[in-house]
Image 1 (cartoon, rainbow, N blue to C red):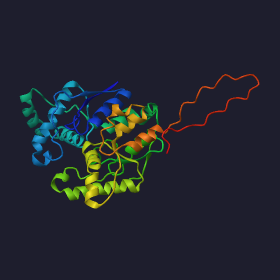
Image 2: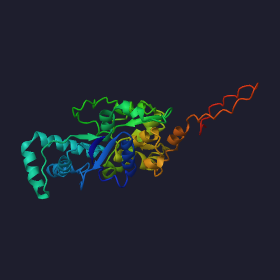
Image 3: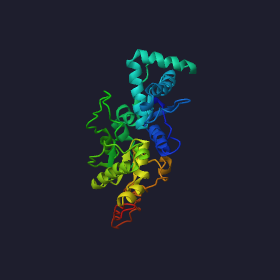
Image 4: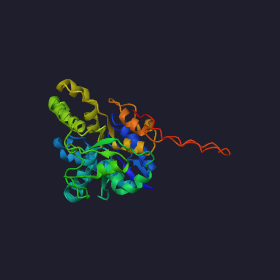
Length: 320
C-alpha cells in the first residue's frame, strides 16, 4: 500500500467535501493510504504570496516539516494548494539562506525542514504513481458514451515543474478519462483560468471568463466538465445562474471532480462520492452509469422435444 501525507486544504470540510470523500474512496480502491497531515495549516491560498512571500513560504514550510517528520511525501488535491506547497518546497531546497530563515521561525513550533519531501498533485499520483493500468483493473462500470470536458485550469500545469508532464499540451487528464471509459472531448479552454478570486474584485470580468469556459464545453457537446480543483469547481458550477442572468444564456452543465467520475466507474455508490449536493444536477452522468446491460436471466431447464428458450434481448436501464 502506498502512503502519502495528505494535505486536504481549507475547503475539504466545506465547499469541496465531495472532493475529499471521493478522494478517500477511490484511493482506498487503488491501495493508497492518505494520512492527513496532523495539525496542518492554511497554505496561504491564492493571494498571500503576493502580499508577503516570506510568510507564505513559512506557512507552507510548516506543513512540509510535519510531513517530513512522518517520512512521507505530500499530496494535495487542490491546484492552488499544490502550487503553493510545490513552489515553497522548490525555493527552500534551492535557497539555503531562505531555508535557514524559515527554520529559525519553525523552531518556535519545535519543527525543522530538511528538504526531504516531494509535493504531488492528487491527479498526478493517480496517473503516474498508481498508473492507468492499475486504475483500469478497478473499472466495473465504464462510463461509455459519457462526453467529458477535462478542465485542468491554469495553476495545475504552470510553470513547468520538470515532472514529465507537458505544461503547454498536457494529455494525462484525457488519458485518465479514457481509462475509465469516458469520451474526452476536444476542449480548447481546458488550460484557461476560471476567474478564481477575481470574482471578488471584478465580478463581471470573472463571470465572462466562466461564460467562455461553459460555452466552449457546450460547443464541444460535453455532458459534464471534470475538474481537479475546488475553486475551479465552485466557479464553474455555482456561478452558472449568475452567468445566465448577466449574459442571457441558459447554461446548466454538471461540474464534477475527476475522483467522482473515477469512483462511479469503479462501481462506488454515488452517495459515498459526495454526489447529491450539487447546484447543477449530475443526472446526465448518473444516467450514463445506469445504461449498462442487465444481467442475463437464468435459462429455464429444457423440456424434452421442446425448442430452446429464446435468448432475452439486452435491456439498457434508463435508456431514453
